[in-house]
Structure formats: structure tokens, C-alpha cells
Image (cartoon, rainbow, N blue to C red; front, side, top):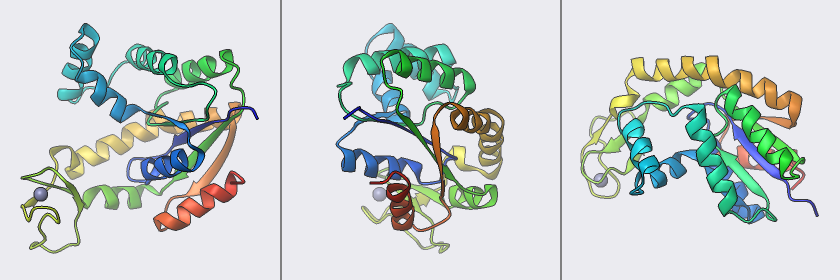
Length: 214
Ligand SMILES: [Zn+2]
């Protein structure tokens, strides 16, 4: 059987990361998750590692060239006979054209894009409820109570500095400006399925499996 490639795309807070992990498990696939990859690389004691770390630490976005370097490197390390699931990339058209070229050039023409869609208001609401424990850094979701503490250690929960309403609005603007065009591009170049992300996790999971015929 030909190895398939799956590309998850959608706004932050849509739950696509969780769904991507479910799919990786189900298919025993290789997983290319850009956020984790960048954290891993920024821990490496190399010129590129230090370069990535300085960008990530200061909240700057990597250039498309940097992302391309990370992608080429990762793809040279994984088992290409297996299925591959991508999450967190591509976020811009430049990254999308590069990734598809890489995949097509390596004979991976069976590409399925999974667009987990969520209305802007709902995305905003979900991101506004995110908290993190001040002590052990475990993420949490606010239940609206001011007395809520960390489930793990009982520590105080706080809003991350990049989750202020202004910062969230800015990220969503950027998503609409840079990433939504990628959805159209993937629709044109790959088989794209659109999934309603405004549902419980288990329902989204079922919808994805059904759309993929799994
Ligand atoms: Zn804690």
C-alpha cells in the first residue's frame, strides 16, 4: 500500500493537535509537529539551534527559509515508508508550496489535508480560558472560578502573557491573513476534508476517522 500523508490545519484552540496525535497512534505514523520540533532544535548546541532559540524565546516567527530547513532535516531522519502526519506546518503559502514539492518529489502524492474549522468567536473563547500553573507550569482550562488551582500541585493558575485578549486577537488576525489562504491552496492541490471543530473531542475524532474511511 502506498504511504499516505496527512496535513492538519486549523486555528489554534481547534483541538487539531490532539486529533493529530490520535491519528498518529491509530496509523502508527511518523509525526512531524512543528512546535515540538522547534523546541527540540532550540535545545541543540548548534548555530541553527541557537538561532531558533533566540527567535522562539523572543516570540518572533521563523522565516519560511528556517522552516524549510527544519522540514528537510526532519524528513531526512524519518522512515518514509510509513504514513506521515503533519501538524503546525504549513502556516504560510511559501511553506505550503515547499512542503508539497518535497512530498511530491519523494513520490508521496497521496496527500490528505484535514481542516479542523472553528468560528473565530469560539477560538477566541477557548484561548481566553487557557491558564498555566505558576509553580509547575502545567496547562489548565479555566472553569470560571477564581478559586481554581492547579490539579497537579495546587499552585496558583495564571494567564500566559501571550494569551491576553490583545495577543489572542493579533494571533487570530495573523491566522486569517497567512494561514487561511493555505487552506484554499491545499484544497486545490490535495484532497481536503473539512471537519467541524466546534464539537466534543470524541465527536471530532469520529468525524475525522469517518472522513478518512478509517
Ligand atoms: Zn502546578
